[in-house]
Structures are given as structure tokens and as C-alpha cells.
Length: 494
Image (tube, helix red, strand yellow):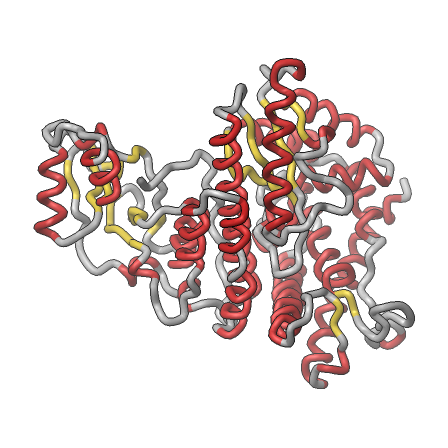
């Protein structure tokens, strides 16, 4: 069955002409369409659908109502919903169809279809030209030489029936990262692909948890935070998640169920290599497993008292994405959060001051400054002092204009009234982010190839003068934009 989820991730932002992305990211989906769509009306019989699929030698039929996409029937639907269930083949195909299935625009990059398939374990995605049905793209269409096996890795994850099975199935994730590096994938593409595997593991753990505990007593949204929410994960990452529960939640009646479910998922993710959050920002912590109304009240209190801890928690709230469950719960919360934040110059000033605490490691005359002591002496923490400041700036930029984007590239792409950055600044920051993130990913891939654990600590001496010059230039861009924000907001000193 090709399932439909209410929380489809946003489209990938466009890439620059110089972006060394996967071929799938630079290939428009319409280039993969090899035939006209095979369609039937919803009242056609199941038998007629099977006959049409046999005649046309296809594995799916698109259901069309008044010229619009209505649903989808695949060969798996015929096997699982008809033959296995003993259903009368003369019934209409609408009875077995996936209604309102995921779809992609024909001008979108092919990578977008691959991400949908990977995240949701589907193998057929209708392609639209506006509202017109242009065709169908399948997993086989995306199985090109420069494509990693992300779709098949996710499929294997969804076939597992135990945590131990998931642990073994997650093993190839590091090889996936290496293959993306070998294919010269951009950091933007790599982050999206790697994150879809985390999403697939999370979704499967929740499904296994519900199979063990029974259906959830009230609606909930399992929410990813941090890099997973922004689709910017790499090989080294920990957990950041929470649960938004329906306001019908009652601790006495429902508390034990959600405690067990959250613990099962967080423990399972840890077993699969996504270590526990050092700050305990996980759904297994009762403080991060609350009804919608309580979350809204907490955020209001944090914005009214912007002290350091509150600012940190506020930033977490801005980087959240529903992975599984009732997506409208998070959507309602984010709508309230963005409404309270847009144009809130006091909050923006404090966020700027907080962001300025992470400065790029540049000394006199723009020279690179490496750690002088400690375990990582002679290195630069690319995440803490390079990428994280750009993530902070992108978040502030989005909040200033009330943009709902979550990914850093998408946030920097957005412009609007009240924007804190110029178009030139945003272009420079996007290029700097891509360069720093690519450097980080290649550094991690090199460590893993040498049998070492991946980290974020780069030794500039291991790189050419050319790369060190690019590194300095990227960090200067970050420093210069930070200086502009400090001038505009006074560093938060109000």
C-alpha cells in the first residue's frame, strides 16, 4: 500500500548552478517520465484495474475524477487488499485505493520524489503539471547509477519487526553517507537524504510501539527538533524530539501509555546509534511530552522572560517538524508561536545577543584560530563555530518576516518585509553554509573510512592552502553578518 501522511515535508529549495548535488537533484522529474499516465475512473472495477495494469505492463493505476488526481492503486494493493482479503474483484477500485496520495510537480528535482519514497516507504508517486496528471515515477525510475540505496534501505527498515532488526538495518547508514560523498552530493542533498532514514526509523519504532501497546488513547504528534527537523543531519547526531498530545489527554488515564511509548522509541533510537540527548530533550522526559495547551503556555512564558535557558528552549521550538501522528497538533502550535514572534523586536534582539555568543574562530587579519588546549587542540569545531551561527542567523531572519520554513537554506532563501538580511547577505550565507557543511561531511566520511568515530573537529593543516582560504572566507561571511546584526539590534542590550 502506498500510504498517505498529513505532514508531507516541504519541497527542497532550489540549488545554485554550481551546486555539486546528486544527479537526482539536478534532474527534473519530467525527464524520468517514459510514458503517458495509466488512469481509470474511481467507479471502474478492481478486475478492470488488474487487466489494465497487465495490458500496459505497469505496477500502478492512477484514479482520476473530473480530470483531477483522486487516488492510486498499486500491485501491492491488489495483493494485500483484494487477494489476501478475499475481496470481490467486481467492487470499484475506489474501495482499495490510497486516496489523496503524495504527488510531486513535474518541474521539481527527482530527489524530491526519492525523499518522499524513503521517508514514507512508498514506491509510486504521481507527477503533476499544475493540476494535470503528467505521469508516474516509481522507485525503479530512480535507481540510477548515481543514486544511493536510500529507498531500499528505508524499505528494509519498514520490514523489521523488532528493535534488534532495526539496529541491524540502520547499520548501512554510515555507508550511505560515504556513498553520497563519493557521488559529490551537496551538503543540502545529503542532509535531506540522511534525515529521511532517521525519520523512517522513528516511524517504524512508533508503529512497533503501538503494535505492542495498542492504539494511542488520544491523538499525538511525534515531533523532531534540531537538525532532524531542519533535515540537516550528518553521521554524528543525537536525539532531539518531543510529543504534542491532544488536549483530551488525561495524565491519570493516558500517562502510562505515552510514557511507555516514548521510552520504547527513544531507547530504540539509541540502540540504532542515535544517542540520548545530553540535555534530555526527548519525549521520554515528561517535560517534553505535553498537551497542546501546555506547550503554548510554556512558549508564552519563555518569550515573556527571555533569560538564557528560556532563549535556548525558544530556539528549540522554532526548529520542529512532525514525523508521525496528528500533524495538525504541531501546525496549530507553530501558528501560535510564529504569531507571537513576528515583529517581536525584543525577542529578536535577545536571540541576536544569544547567537553572538558563538563567533567564528578568526583572529587578527582574519587568521584561523584553532583550539589551543584540550583533546581537540589544533582543530576547529565546524559545527559549533561555523554551521551553528549560520543556523542561528537563518532562524532570526525567518522569524523577522514570519516565515514558517524550518530548513536553514529555505530560511535564507525567503525574503519579505521586515527581513534582517539583504539578498546579497543571504546568498553569501547560503554559499558559506554549503561549503562548511560539505567540509564537515567529508571530514566525517574520512574518519569513518579510517575506522574512527565521526566528529566535528577539523584540523586545517590537513587541507590545502586553497581550502583553508575558502574556509577563512566562509567564516568571514558569518562574522560580517553577525556584526551587522549586532549593530542593528545592539547585541540585545536594550
